[in-house]
Image 1 (cartoon, rainbow, N blue to C red):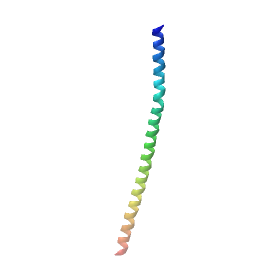
Image 2 (cartoon, rainbow, N blue to C red):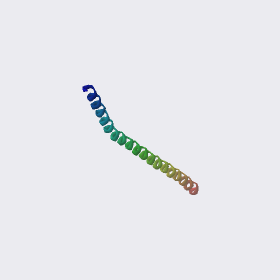
Image 3 (cartoon, one colour):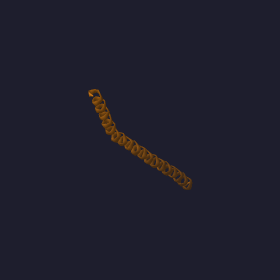
Image 4 (cartoon, helix red, strand yellow):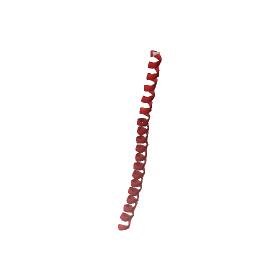
Length: 68
């Protein structure tokens, strides 16, 4: 009977440990998703900056052409 009690106690502790790990894993997943979203937002912002810089180059070239 003592061995069965030990087995059930061990199983119970393992179940509690597993339950305790799930929120941490979900929090890590949420943080990972947030990082992906942040990275995507940064990529969009960088692309917008590239477009803006290209527009400035074109405008500067046009101004240089008109100045002569």
